[in-house]
Image (cartoon, rainbow, N blue to C red; front, side):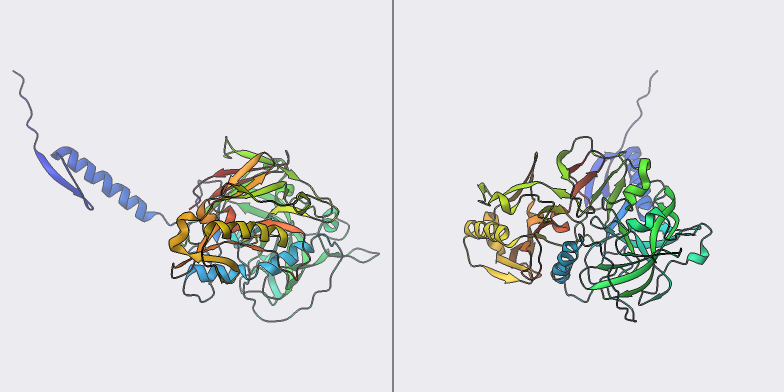
Length: 458
């Protein structure tokens, strides 16, 4: 005789939700929720994930970064302060064509970080010494402050503590590949180089080789600068990781390991508790991604030029003369993708045309806020037009969070772009990191293409 088992229904409560189910399922569900909660609680969002080959890309002033932000009452004011340093960045970018050695004035004292950027956690040497290095797509060389450095921060790389450190002299091919190298006409000596950075800072360093660990990958004999002295406030306190196109950049040195491919997804500056990711190599890159050609400038070999053909504001294609956007290797004119500039900067005539069309469509009182000259009442944001960047073979419609920034009170919304400063002799348009946030930007140097795909980076 078959006996039917009786089932009792009970009301199970999970957080603010209540669900009616039988008692065994209630107990099992409760156990599952408890397991998930305990597992989540055990995860440290700032810990190095040993089972992941991606590097975390960390906003410079986030919880997982060791750097202390300037005293501001909101993240918006912090961004405004960071964007005010963009003219120094543009000065630096405009001088990259100059390969001549420069003298470096050295001033003692601890330096304060004055640039806005993202950092990645790497290890140098054997055993590995952890450093938070600034990610820079417009610079080739990597460099870190070393013990005994004049004017550096308290966190330095200790060459004597590494069993795999090696020196490089002036006879090495790598020496002549570093911008600002200095060697005697005769004889052999250590390879020294001087560089400016950020427009108001400079460094002197010795070229060395050692192992670098990037997540699960180890590159032996990685060439980088060991900083001896710095001057100014824009030198990243724990070093810089160059991802440019030159022969001494990380991607070039890695060779077949990464096949000339990398991508990043930059989280919003608001992402205090979250980080993005840096993917090195073709594995794990988006299968379906729109691309535009990368253009090469032999006079500025580090920079990633793209062919920007136009800009639309809403449905209106802004009338911009083609000569103001055209790529010209001789003058350096054109458009680059850069990870170190905060807000996108266009040459003055181009920006004025975009700004004027935007103001016309917003149709209301306009004010300014810091570097932003086109601010309006946030209550009028519904009529704000989208900005579309037209590249060769690719149209990028910027989400509103990539084209507008709000005041700390929330009463104003501002177009988060600006003109290149008048005092900077620059012919560059720069697509900056605020406009790249929450997008997967893929650089394929082997096939000379740049890909863009939407992705939530936080």
